[in-house]
Every structure is written in structure tokens, then in C-alpha cells.
Image 1 (cartoon, helix red, strand yellow):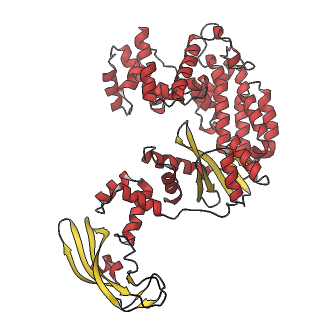
Image 2: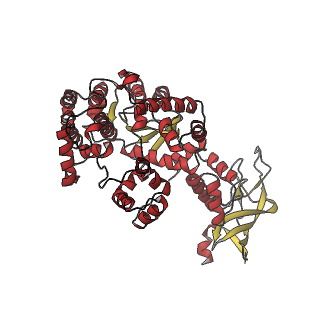
Image 3: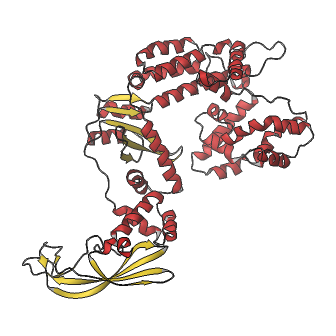
Length: 529
């Protein structure tokens, strides 16, 4: 059993094994009769002396292992060799100036690549192979860097955030094999252009609709085929549908009395920026002011928590405004998935409220038993409007929101229940302006899934004929990138593997609390399993 566990000691003579509560000590000595000189490569049999080396090895049964190895120093008799003496190295067991066995070093390298410094050091201590965070980082620094001479035939390009909203990098992948090729420290066109010129051979480039990447590919390799990713195209379409419904959100509520006409928030032919401030609602004016105030501080590097205290806002509100490009984008970012989850328990909460139970803590405890996983604060916020109004809770809470209406228009028809299909039909009856949106969505879905890229021009004309500004804007943007979009809707290539690795990069970055430098993060991205 010991011979199997200590197979890497076959080339030495094991003299003694001592086991105590904390460690296993192995005493051994080298037995070879000759050794090659590291200077000239000649073999020497003349022994100059002996000394002991202590090597850390892989743990056994939860105990760290230390090898006390006696090695010999040889004399080199080759004329002209710069070395007079040298120490023998046992293959698979010792290395120059290293106090670990190769198998232990490789294990620590894997831990460091997966967890970086401190987390890997904590896990190594738990595995009885203790080391420091700095030692692990030094091991990573000694790993050979991955450098390619030529680029892959099908290259995937996408950006990722070192710090969301501020600093971005670029990941490059071989779409055919799924291998990570390189990582660039920014997402500018100049950086990618220089990389493509240094690594010729690209024939197809899969990318999102970022103009910087498109410009870089056109400059460095104009003969390459650019392929716009289908996922990003579908997301762009869903965002346009969301904006269309947001402009007609007054149609979402069921009509009461003679309120049968659709009153869009912003007409299809009028830009939001052209609306006079005097005609805007108080909420829109407040939203613009908050957006300007938050970005004024966030752009100077002020932390979100400090901005929240300065402006008297909640941290989540400040974060939403800080990550929104325009005030309208901030209005569409209301509510997280956890907050939206509470709407499933609204009927129960409203019924208990009308029964006289208005304690948010008690109501939270009751719906937790029903499976709710949110916080008391979310329940209290959900009931705040009813508490302030002083009226009984509605018997049936409002169900149709902008998000749900967007889902009804973009979901596969076979996945929509009959009740939801009826809601969509009623919405289109109340708002004839949106009547052409579902047809555009389904036509685009068929074109995308069946690879009918040749029908793109006809679809763009159809989208422009709806008269809805978000769809017209989307069509205008797709026309500017017409060839890449057509290729994305025709060819088999996509950025799916790249997007998966972007999620992996996010996990790696979070594991280091966002404090890993570019060199460390690059090695983790390229070399980790």
C-alpha cells in the first residue's frame, strides 16, 4: 500500500517512515551511481559530498508529508565546463531551488488558478498542504504564458467588465474548438486591430453589434466574414419591443368607463428629448434630476454607498441610476427578480390585509411557510402603497406589466397559456398601434431559427412600416450592420461559447472580489480548467 501511495519515490531508497498526529516524515536517500552536469550535460561519478533536502509532498490521510532526502554533490571533470560541482536531481522528485515535489507544485498551481491567493491558501491548509497566498501567486507568475503565432480560423470576440460601467476587457476564443486564445486589457478598436495584425489567419469573426469590434475587423482583416451573434440580435429586438410597450403603458390596464382610447406616453413619431419640460410629469422630472446627480458623483469615482447617503436614496436605487445610460433606462430597471417573485404571493397578502393583518413581519413569516424566499423589507415595500392610500387592498392585484406584456409578445406561441393569450389579444384590441409588433417578432424568430438571412431586408421594411420609433431605430441600426446581421441569420456560427466564457470570467472576478490585477486575471482565464 505504501509503495502504491509513494510511487514517486521508486528512484530513491526509503529508509524510514515516521507517523505522528500531524505529519508523516519519510527519510530517503538517492542511490544512482552517476548524475548529469547541468552545465555541460556530461555524466560524473565522482562524489564531492552529501547534504539533506527537506521536501514538502502531497498529504496522506489528512497529514502533511515531509521527505528528508539525502542527496550528493558531484564533481564535474569535463574540461571547459563552468561548473566544478553540482547537486544531483532526482527525476520526478526534486527540482533546483524548490522545496516541493513536482506533484505538490502542480496541485498548488491548480488551486491558485481556480481560487487565486487567499481562498486557495485557506483550502490548501484544510487539505494539509499549507502555504501562503503570496507563494501561490508566485507559482502563477512562473507558469508559461500562452502566446499564439496565428489566430484561429473562426474567432469569437466579446467584452467583459473588470469594473462594471468603468473598465472593460476583451476575451478572444477559438469558436471551433472552444479554446481561450487571449485576453486584452480594454475593448477599443485600436487594441483589437493591433492583435489581429500580429496574429493573421482569421477568416470568420463572431461578435456582438459593438461598433469598435466591427471597425477593428474591417481595418485589420477586411476579407474576414463578420457574424453578428443571434443572441444579441434577439435581445435587441426584445428591448425594442419593451420600449414600444413602455410608450403605450397606459393601455396595459383594463379600461374603465369610456377610457377606451390608447394614450401613449411618448408618440411614435416624437422623441422623448423633444418633449418640453413643462409637459413632463413630476416623476419624469425627478428621474432626470436623480440621474444627473448620481452620474455627477459616480463619474468622479464616488462609491455607491456614499452617493446613497449624500442624496438620501437607497443603494439599489443609486446603483440602478449609475448603470443606466439615460433616465429612461433607469425607469425600465425597477425591481429585481427577487422583488418580482413577491407578486406571486400578492393575492394572499391582499386577502390577509383586508382581513385586518397589516403587520409586514407577520405576513412575511406566513408567506415564508408558503415558499417565499425574500426579505421582510421587500414585503414592507410591496405593501407600502396600500398602507399610504388608506384603502382596502384590491381583490385582484394588477397582473399585466410592461415586462409581462413584453414576454407575451416575444415568447413562443406554444408556451403561452390560453389565459395569457387572451390578455395579449385584449391588449392589442385596446392598443391598435401595437398590432404589428407580435407579427414582426414571430417573423424575426422564424428567420433566426430557420436561417433565412436572405429575408432580412424585407423584415426591416416591415418593421419600419409599423411606425413605432423603437422598431424603426432597431431597423436603422441593423441596416448599418447589414452584412454581419445577414451572416448571423444565415451561417451556423455564433458567440455562444464566448458568452459562456464571459460568465466564467465573471465568476473568476467575483472570486477575487474584483481586486485581481490584469496579469493574474488573464492567467486564470487562459490557464484554469
